[in-house]
Image 1: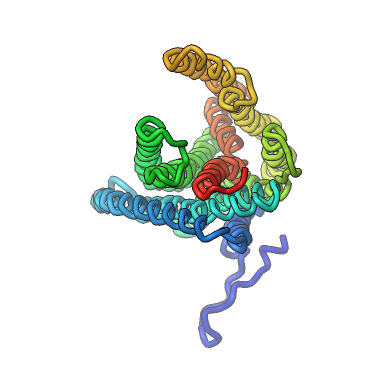
Image 2 (image 1 turned 120 degrees about the vertical axis):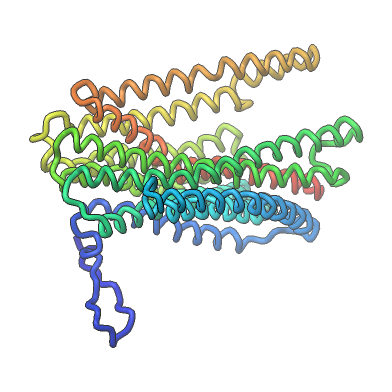
Length: 498
């Protein structure tokens, strides 16, 4: 590969150390592994490009800027207070891990890995919130020009969140895997089991950050939302987003700290953990199949390489999201779906060739190892994610019957609305429940679980990576929601035209 011949610049011309090539750094690791670091770096570069792009737009009139600034200050105040609490907990955890590493209960690199994972997870939440609070007024101002302009600003801002989460997480995984390959003496698949077990423990830091950001931010979000409604609609008798109700600022702050920063930290942990878990399961399966070191490495690098492919597919698909002027709600949803469907199609095709390149040379000679079977597990996980997303939309969008049925109950009072809402919510759980059970069974069977149990478990692990491989664009659509919601609030509070 051409990339393996690139020469890294020397620190100084007088140094006695020889120039180090990229090929020497990843020596022994299969070439397709480069998809992981390349995808991670590309994600961060495009996140920066999208950020600079939408920041060029105007925030609109002075009153729109004033409202946006108030939301920004509130969001920073909340996140700063949360960071102080989280930092104290992380310091205690790292000190405990240092003590465990000294006594031999944990690897010496575990405290550092946990600290880095936690820091990057928190950084993703901060960058997402910074982006969202800067994008709301710009979305409202852009929507005055055209529907597509408003959609572009909000979606590209959401894409910054999606690409930051996937980029930082995959970069962390990629760098640690190369570093530990160089530090540890890898002589057999058993050593790779130790390596992946060490990296798997790093996910603890991301999980801790997600706990505080998602739960704390979520509670704040709903408390502020209900409080603003009670004060405005019930006590003062004014609309939800009204400039005369100062609690609407807290409501908009909640959208950012909970639905953007909290969601980003939460999905960072899911994405990061699923890749590390799949790599650890691949190492265990390699020992069971009695693979050589080079063959085991090919199996282990499949999950991060797949994640890198997913980032590239997401970047391509982000550019496909656009809307026509005067488009209906259904057309807007379709434009968002187009990006997700395109990225999924790229992964379905690209993952087959990726596995063929990694495992094809030796898969036929190893009993219990099938390129087609592992590819089937990936497609199963990817398809399950799409089905769950569709089910969620059916039960939450006012374009579909479940929400309309709840609306009809409002004719007879709030009691029947509550009963109908709870009933529809309970019924809605059957789609993700059955889908996940079916996907687990299919992935386990397709990957060869009937012959080799650990290969079946690995199939479930890589199916999870497949499900999250489009996170770059699916998280963009998630973050787009609160950004557009804040834009609507800003427009209403500043009395913009309909």
